[in-house]
Image (tube, rainbow, N blue to C red; front, side):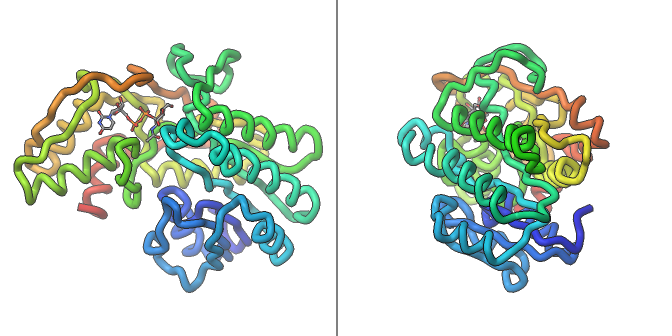
Length: 319
Ligand code: UD1
């Protein structure tokens, strides 16, 4: 959809960033990434020789100034962030620097130096809804309750990004990701996305039958799980649509699936029966979450993958 353009992806070696970079590089785009490899990995990039890779934090003003003076970008996807909500609670100051201050700096550098920019897309999160329980979660909700440093920084960055359109005419949009899953998602932390942890547990179980998967709660909690390839389509639609200027979009499927159902699907696809241990629910866990994607659909979005199809593709690539 986006071809022959110059594109900056912050967090470009991470899960979503590298999937986007790998896609865009195939379409004759010049791709520049910034990533400090704190979560990302250069091995995620299929053709790293063709990408201008800058290994440093997005908080490095020197690097940002250099990149913005070396290039005139058509599109910027700002995906770099401390992605762990738990880490943000441990270290709010550091999170604020990475997740908020870098956004503001990028906005200012765009205002001063990027005259050709077609769109900045900022990646926010369903975390901004917090424990506001109305379902489905809609961009129109007047009440939101960002509960953690992660969520507060995402929300304030999102507002700044969108207000740079109304205040200065900088072409911006924001997206709120729901539960994204797929190849290259890092399962390293207990707070990583549940599907990456689950798949990792199946891999261990194949060689060690004593391994169990821990479910926090009764497994009937539901989430709006979206396959990463659908996210890449959504990002490009939001970036290229004139309608989405100054607007924020939920990026989900509009459907919810329980954790128990995900386990059943994987058991089926892998012809295994993973032992499950049900533990006490995690503090602060919400029971149900799903998006309405009516707004995104108005841009022409329609998710291609339901959880079954998405899991199947995930397993083909990574099991
Ligand atoms: C996501 C964030 C979380 C944030 C929340 C609020 C990620 C990976 N998680 O959580 O940090 O606080 O949004 O917006 O971005 N689970 C298990 N076993 C595991 C891991 C998880 O049972 O090993 C459960 C969790 O308790 C939860 C469900 O699986 O009920 C989904 O977990 P997760 O993937 O972390 O997503 P969210 O709960 O939506």
